[in-house]
Amino acid sequence: MEYEFEGKTEMEAIDAAAAELGLARDEFDVEIVESVSGGLFKKGKVKIRIHLHGNAAANARKPERKVEREPDHDTPGEAAREPVRAPANPEATDEFERQVIDFTRDIVEKMGYSGKVSVLFREEKKLGLRLESDNASILIGKKGKNLDAIQLLANVYVSKLGREDIRIVLDSENYRIRREESLVRLAYETAEKVRRTKQSSLLEPMNPFERRIIHTTLNDIVDVETKSEGEGLYKQVRVLFKGAAR
Image 1 (tube, rainbow, N blue to C red):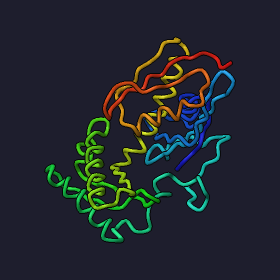
Image 2: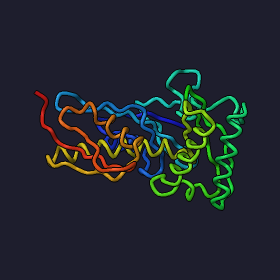
Image 3: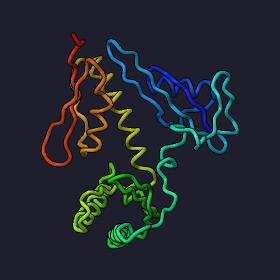
Image 4: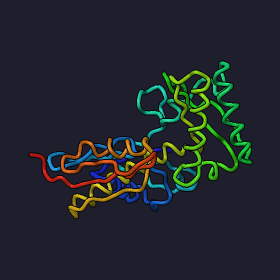
Protein backbone atom coordinates (compact mmCIF):
# COMPACT_ATOMS: atom_id res chain seq x y z
CA MET A 1 0.00 0.00 0.00
CA GLU A 2 1.40 3.39 -1.00
CA TYR A 3 0.57 7.09 -0.51
CA GLU A 4 2.26 10.27 -1.71
CA PHE A 5 2.84 13.49 0.25
CA GLU A 6 4.57 16.79 -0.45
CA GLY A 7 6.39 19.39 1.62
CA LYS A 8 8.93 22.20 1.33
CA THR A 9 11.50 19.77 2.77
CA GLU A 10 11.66 16.02 3.15
CA MET A 11 11.11 16.24 6.91
CA GLU A 12 8.04 18.42 6.41
CA ALA A 13 6.59 15.86 3.98
CA ILE A 14 7.38 12.98 6.38
CA ASP A 15 5.79 14.82 9.31
CA ALA A 16 2.68 15.43 7.21
CA ALA A 17 2.51 11.76 6.29
CA ALA A 18 2.91 10.60 9.89
CA ALA A 19 0.24 13.00 11.13
CA GLU A 20 -2.30 12.19 8.43
CA LEU A 21 -1.77 8.42 8.57
CA GLY A 22 -1.66 8.36 12.36
CA LEU A 23 1.61 6.41 12.39
CA ALA A 24 5.02 6.80 13.98
CA ARG A 25 7.95 7.70 11.72
CA ASP A 26 9.50 4.22 12.03
CA GLU A 27 6.32 2.46 10.93
CA PHE A 28 6.68 3.23 7.23
CA ASP A 29 9.33 3.35 4.50
CA VAL A 30 10.03 6.55 2.61
CA GLU A 31 10.97 6.91 -1.05
CA ILE A 32 11.90 10.28 -2.52
CA VAL A 33 9.89 10.69 -5.73
CA GLU A 34 10.82 14.27 -6.63
CA SER A 35 13.14 16.90 -5.17
CA VAL A 36 13.13 20.50 -6.37
CA SER A 37 15.99 22.49 -4.89
CA GLY A 38 15.15 25.66 -3.03
CA GLY A 39 17.18 28.82 -2.89
CA LEU A 40 16.90 32.53 -2.33
CA PHE A 41 14.80 32.92 -5.47
CA LYS A 42 13.41 29.37 -5.69
CA LYS A 43 10.85 27.60 -3.55
CA GLY A 44 11.88 24.05 -2.73
CA LYS A 45 9.52 21.10 -2.93
CA VAL A 46 9.93 17.45 -2.02
CA LYS A 47 7.49 14.72 -2.97
CA ILE A 48 7.76 11.42 -1.09
CA ARG A 49 6.09 8.05 -1.47
CA ILE A 50 5.11 6.20 1.70
CA HIS A 51 5.23 2.40 1.66
CA LEU A 52 3.09 0.59 4.24
CA HIS A 53 3.40 -3.08 5.10
CA GLY A 54 1.79 -5.52 7.55
CA ASN A 55 0.33 -3.98 10.72
CA ALA A 56 1.14 -0.45 9.61
CA ALA A 57 -0.99 -0.86 6.49
CA ALA A 58 -3.87 -2.21 8.60
CA ASN A 59 -3.62 0.47 11.31
CA ALA A 60 -3.08 3.54 9.14
CA ARG A 61 -5.84 6.13 8.85
CA LYS A 62 -7.03 6.72 5.33
CA PRO A 63 -5.82 10.18 4.24
CA GLU A 64 -8.58 12.68 3.60
CA ARG A 65 -6.91 14.45 0.72
CA LYS A 66 -4.19 12.08 -0.46
CA VAL A 67 -5.05 9.46 -3.03
CA GLU A 68 -4.07 5.89 -2.25
CA ARG A 69 -2.24 4.30 -5.16
CA GLU A 70 -0.86 0.96 -6.15
CA PRO A 71 2.15 0.67 -8.49
CA ASP A 72 1.07 0.99 -12.11
CA HIS A 73 3.81 -0.52 -14.20
CA ASP A 74 2.18 0.61 -17.44
CA THR A 75 2.46 4.30 -16.56
CA PRO A 76 5.87 5.93 -17.23
CA GLY A 77 7.55 7.15 -14.06
CA GLU A 78 5.02 5.56 -11.71
CA ALA A 79 6.64 2.19 -11.03
CA ALA A 80 9.34 1.73 -8.41
CA ARG A 81 12.83 2.15 -9.78
CA GLU A 82 14.04 -1.44 -9.59
CA PRO A 83 11.02 -3.01 -11.35
CA VAL A 84 11.39 -0.46 -14.16
CA ARG A 85 14.98 -1.59 -14.77
CA ALA A 86 14.40 -5.28 -14.10
CA PRO A 87 15.17 -7.44 -17.13
CA ALA A 88 12.78 -9.97 -18.59
CA ASN A 89 15.41 -12.63 -17.96
CA PRO A 90 17.74 -12.40 -14.91
CA GLU A 91 19.83 -15.27 -16.24
CA ALA A 92 22.83 -14.76 -18.51
CA THR A 93 21.80 -14.41 -22.14
CA ASP A 94 25.26 -14.69 -23.70
CA GLU A 95 28.80 -15.86 -22.95
CA PHE A 96 29.93 -12.44 -21.77
CA GLU A 97 27.21 -12.17 -19.12
CA ARG A 98 27.87 -15.75 -18.01
CA GLN A 99 31.58 -15.01 -17.56
CA VAL A 100 30.93 -11.86 -15.52
CA ILE A 101 28.34 -13.58 -13.32
CA ASP A 102 30.65 -16.56 -12.71
CA PHE A 103 33.59 -14.26 -11.93
CA THR A 104 31.60 -12.20 -9.44
CA ARG A 105 30.23 -15.30 -7.72
CA ASP A 106 33.76 -16.76 -7.52
CA ILE A 107 35.01 -13.60 -5.78
CA VAL A 108 32.28 -13.92 -3.15
CA GLU A 109 33.08 -17.60 -2.61
CA LYS A 110 36.81 -16.89 -2.27
CA MET A 111 35.89 -14.36 0.42
CA GLY A 112 34.36 -17.29 2.30
CA TYR A 113 30.69 -16.60 1.61
CA SER A 114 28.01 -18.08 -0.61
CA GLY A 115 25.79 -16.02 -2.84
CA LYS A 116 23.72 -15.93 -5.99
CA VAL A 117 24.53 -13.46 -8.76
CA SER A 118 22.00 -12.60 -11.45
CA VAL A 119 21.30 -9.82 -13.95
CA LEU A 120 19.56 -6.83 -12.37
CA PHE A 121 19.24 -4.65 -15.48
CA ARG A 122 20.65 -4.19 -18.95
CA GLU A 123 21.30 -0.74 -20.38
CA GLU A 124 23.43 0.62 -23.18
CA LYS A 125 27.06 0.36 -22.02
CA LYS A 126 25.97 -0.78 -18.55
CA LEU A 127 25.17 -4.15 -16.99
CA GLY A 128 23.62 -4.34 -13.52
CA LEU A 129 24.16 -7.39 -11.32
CA ARG A 130 22.25 -8.37 -8.21
CA LEU A 131 24.09 -10.17 -5.39
CA GLU A 132 21.88 -12.18 -3.05
CA SER A 133 23.41 -13.70 0.06
CA ASP A 134 22.63 -14.51 3.69
CA ASN A 135 25.75 -12.45 4.43
CA ALA A 136 24.68 -9.43 2.39
CA SER A 137 25.44 -6.93 5.16
CA ILE A 138 29.05 -8.14 5.32
CA LEU A 139 29.45 -8.20 1.55
CA ILE A 140 28.08 -4.65 1.33
CA GLY A 141 30.37 -3.46 4.11
CA LYS A 142 30.56 -0.12 5.85
CA LYS A 143 29.40 2.66 3.51
CA GLY A 144 29.26 0.01 0.76
CA LYS A 145 33.05 -0.27 0.50
CA ASN A 146 33.09 -4.07 0.17
CA LEU A 147 30.44 -3.91 -2.53
CA ASP A 148 32.46 -1.20 -4.29
CA ALA A 149 35.59 -3.37 -4.12
CA ILE A 150 33.83 -6.38 -5.67
CA GLN A 151 32.34 -4.12 -8.33
CA LEU A 152 35.78 -2.69 -9.11
CA LEU A 153 37.25 -6.18 -9.57
CA ALA A 154 34.35 -7.10 -11.85
CA ASN A 155 35.03 -4.02 -13.99
CA VAL A 156 38.75 -4.85 -14.17
CA TYR A 157 37.80 -8.35 -15.31
CA VAL A 158 35.46 -6.94 -17.96
CA SER A 159 38.31 -4.78 -19.28
CA LYS A 160 40.52 -7.87 -19.55
CA LEU A 161 37.76 -9.48 -21.61
CA GLY A 162 38.13 -6.59 -24.03
CA ARG A 163 34.81 -4.99 -23.10
CA GLU A 164 35.94 -1.62 -21.77
CA ASP A 165 32.74 -0.18 -23.25
CA ILE A 166 30.64 -1.96 -20.62
CA ARG A 167 30.42 -0.78 -16.99
CA ILE A 168 29.33 -3.23 -14.29
CA VAL A 169 27.06 -1.98 -11.50
CA LEU A 170 26.76 -4.39 -8.56
CA ASP A 171 23.96 -4.06 -6.02
CA SER A 172 22.72 -6.07 -3.05
CA GLU A 173 19.61 -5.57 -0.91
CA ASN A 174 18.87 -2.39 -2.93
CA TYR A 175 21.84 -0.75 -1.22
CA ARG A 176 22.60 1.57 -4.15
CA ILE A 177 19.09 3.03 -4.16
CA ARG A 178 18.98 3.40 -0.38
CA ARG A 179 22.42 5.01 -0.35
CA GLU A 180 21.45 7.47 -3.08
CA GLU A 181 18.33 8.55 -1.18
CA SER A 182 20.41 8.90 2.00
CA LEU A 183 22.94 11.10 0.21
CA VAL A 184 20.22 13.34 -1.24
CA ARG A 185 18.87 13.86 2.28
CA LEU A 186 22.39 14.55 3.57
CA ALA A 187 22.98 17.09 0.82
CA TYR A 188 19.82 19.08 1.60
CA GLU A 189 20.37 18.93 5.36
CA THR A 190 23.97 20.11 4.97
CA ALA A 191 22.94 22.92 2.62
CA GLU A 192 20.35 24.15 5.14
CA LYS A 193 22.98 24.10 7.89
CA VAL A 194 25.47 26.00 5.73
CA ARG A 195 22.89 28.63 4.77
CA ARG A 196 21.86 29.05 8.40
CA THR A 197 25.37 29.29 9.89
CA LYS A 198 27.17 30.79 6.85
CA GLN A 199 29.92 28.26 7.68
CA SER A 200 31.22 25.65 5.23
CA SER A 201 30.75 21.96 6.02
CA LEU A 202 33.04 19.07 5.01
CA LEU A 203 31.32 15.74 4.36
CA GLU A 204 32.67 12.23 4.85
CA PRO A 205 34.97 10.68 2.22
CA MET A 206 32.96 9.39 -0.75
CA ASN A 207 33.60 7.60 -4.02
CA PRO A 208 33.14 9.49 -7.33
CA PHE A 209 29.54 8.29 -7.83
CA GLU A 210 28.50 9.43 -4.34
CA ARG A 211 30.22 12.79 -4.72
CA ARG A 212 28.43 13.35 -8.02
CA ILE A 213 25.08 12.85 -6.26
CA ILE A 214 25.96 15.59 -3.74
CA HIS A 215 27.16 17.99 -6.45
CA THR A 216 24.11 17.36 -8.65
CA THR A 217 21.60 17.66 -5.80
CA LEU A 218 22.91 21.07 -4.71
CA ASN A 219 23.76 22.39 -8.16
CA ASP A 220 20.60 24.51 -8.47
CA ILE A 221 20.71 26.12 -5.03
CA VAL A 222 21.77 29.67 -5.80
CA ASP A 223 23.55 30.56 -2.55
CA VAL A 224 25.44 27.29 -1.98
CA GLU A 225 28.30 25.70 -3.89
CA THR A 226 30.25 22.46 -3.59
CA LYS A 227 33.78 21.33 -4.32
CA SER A 228 35.75 18.11 -3.84
CA GLU A 229 38.84 18.06 -1.64
CA GLY A 230 41.54 15.48 -1.08
CA GLU A 231 43.46 12.89 -3.07
CA GLY A 232 42.71 9.39 -4.28
CA LEU A 233 39.42 7.66 -4.99
CA TYR A 234 37.65 8.64 -1.76
CA LYS A 235 37.54 12.44 -1.61
CA GLN A 236 35.43 14.74 0.55
CA VAL A 237 32.84 17.25 -0.61
CA ARG A 238 32.86 20.66 0.99
CA VAL A 239 29.60 22.62 0.94
CA LEU A 240 30.14 26.39 1.06
CA PHE A 241 27.90 29.43 1.45
CA LYS A 242 28.37 31.92 -1.37
CA GLY A 243 25.56 34.35 -0.66
CA ALA A 244 22.69 35.51 -2.83
CA ALA A 245 23.17 35.43 -6.58
CA ARG A 246 23.56 38.83 -8.14
